[in-house]
Structures are given as C-alpha cells and as structure tokens.
Image 1: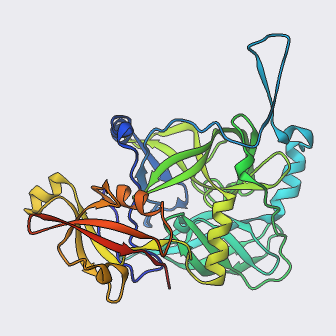
Image 2 (image 1 turned 180 degrees about the horizontal axis):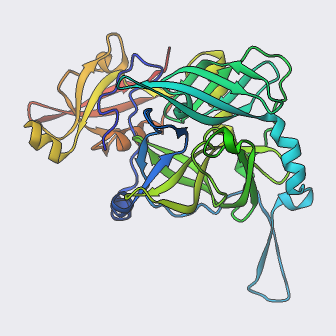
Image 3 (image 1 turned 30 degrees about the vertical axis):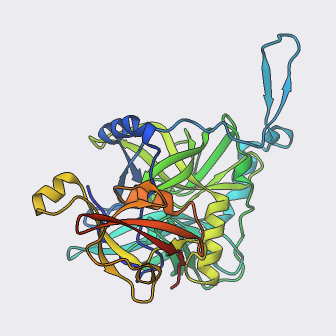
Amino acid sequence: MFRNNRMDENNLYDPVFSPRPPKKRSGLKKFGKAVLGLALVACVSVGSVMGYNALFPAQPADPGSGATQTQNQTQASQTVYLPTYSEDAMTAPEIFQKGVPSVVSITTTIQSYGQIGSGSGTGIVMSADGYIITNNHVVEGAQTIEVTLNDGRSFDGTVVGTDANTDIAVVHVDATDLTAAEFGDSSSLVTGEPVYVIGNPLGTQFAETMTDGIVSAPSREVAIDNYIMNLIQTNAAINPGNSGGPMFNSQGQVVGVVNAKIMQSNANDVEGIGFAIPIETALNVANDLIEYGYVTDRPVLGVSVQSLTTQEALFYRLEPGLIVKEVTAGGPAEAAGVQVNDKIVAFNGVEVEDFTELNYEKDKYEPGDTITLTVERNGSRIDLPLVLGTSSN
C-alpha cells in the first residue's frame, strides 16, 4: 500500500519525507516488510476509515539509559541491574486510582466514500483547562469529536493541532476543572521495567481497561507512513481503541502515548508487540501545536515530490525515484535553484531513493542549516547548496 505519494507543504509541515534506515540493515528491513505490518490502533466501526497501516523494519534493541547498576561479587561475571523505579514503586491498583482520572474516551464520527462511521480512541488530560493529548490518527478526518471524562461528563472536542509525522494531536474541551496527568521521564526507562496501560480497547464498552507488561525495548525504530519513529516497545496488551492513551511507569507517571501494534500481512494480530510514543516527544509536539499550531523545529525543503518505485515507474513510463512535482514560491528549494521534474538523488552526500530515506537524512539537521541537495536534471547530476527552512502554518 502506498500512502501520501504526493506531499504538499501547504499543510502544517514539510512533505512527509521518511527516514533512511542504514544500508547494512536493508536485508532485514525487506524481510520485515514482507512478513510484518504495523497498524495504528484507533478503533473504527464498519463504514468508516480505520487507522492506516505501515511497515515494520526489525531493528536491534537499544539497551536504554537511566538504570543504575552494581556488581555482584559472588560471581565475577554476574551483573545485577537496579532500575531506579524499584525504590518507590506503586502497586497496580494504586497506579490505576492515580492515573484513571486523567484518562478520557474519545469518540468521533467520520465520513468516507459517502458513508458515515464512528471511531474511538483514548486521550490524556494535559492540563486542567481542557487540553488533551491523543494520536493524530484518532481524530484525523473526524467531523465531530466527543470527549468523555472519567467522571462521566461529556464535552464537544475541538482539534487544536495535529502532526502526522509523530502521530500526535491536541484536542480542547471547554472545561477548567480537569485532572491533569503527572508526566514522567521516558528517557530513563530500561528493558524489563514494568509499565501499565489504561484505555478503551474496542471502544467504550471496555472503557478504563488496565493492562500491564514490561518495557520490551526503550527505543525501537518503527516506520509508520514513510516516517521512522523511535518508540517504546512493550508486551502490555494493546488493542484498537487504546490509541492516544497513557503508558504509566511504576510511579503512576505517564511515560508514553500508546499508538500502534504489530500485525501480520494476513491481518492476524501478533501478541505482545505494542508501541508508545515517548512522552518527551509527545509533549514537545503538543506544546508547539498549542502555542504555534505547528511543530517549530522541523526543517523543510520547500518542495512537493512524488516517490516512484521501479515497478511504478515502469507502469507509468517514468523515471523511478523522488521526482519534484512542485517548488514552493519563495521557499528554500526555489532559492537553491531546484526545478520541477528534478530527481532528488542525494541529501548532503547520502543517496536517497524514497520518502523514508530522505526524511531520515533531513531530520538530522535543523532549520537554518546549509546542506547540499543533489538532483539529476537532463541526465546530469547537480549539487545545489540549500539552506533548510522552518515549518509554518
């Protein structure tokens, strides 16, 4: 499945160019693409649009950070890890009682292909004055949004801003007495640390369901819709409807925003492989959306491009690769001399072939950085110095 083959910078951010996995992992990446897919887990009824699928490239686990470790001298080769969470851990019932007032149910109506459907997900109260963080795919395309609090009150929700690259959205309700969640430090998570998920799997019928598990990997690269995200992997049960809900640590602090799980190519679920967006990432994006309406530190090129595989290029009788379809007037690419129908072949010396690879290289830099964009034009390669721009609404 191809999604967003043509991107437009007139939206909140640069075209969703997607990152480049290192070449040495290409074989493993291809295997993952052939066997496993990753699905976002908003719950959507018949006649509406379900969350989009993406491919999952297997990656080596990150050993994490933030743990303290001591050496057990009884065996010279034995190392005992003492994660920081063990000192003041709460019981699961205590975590539920602390966290559930900050968990909301989100129900949407969606129109697609002339049909009206409904969708459901979960949200996390950011502040007492009505700001709620959830997933972009929970509210994407929604015509109406209903937010139901833990105490039973319901409000009409308004989308403040969304960011598809990080799958984060902010919804606002007209209330001033909400119970805000306590946010923790996801960068200190270690493999094996217990985590807890509260949400609405399969919709409001199972509202405020709590599941538990461990951190399977504190940082895992996962490709979603042409963009690689660094996510927390967990074996806690995650199902459609959990999207946008909190992942808690053992102190009852939110350390992640649940957003995806693995699915096989035959649509059968894979048990025990779920993902959450690190809360530092989620909050940085959410705060930008509230203050500016867009993500401020994302570099842009100022082009709309179309990515064609070799098979697609043969079918359409075009050249494969990243073809520039539009150059934004007054943007960085125009200033650098990029032209329509140029083929982008390298970003600052690194060859790129699709959105995933281009976005991966682009996101290593910041707005204002000067890079070299290599394009192919009339059979010749041209190196163009380009000063990266910034996102704007």
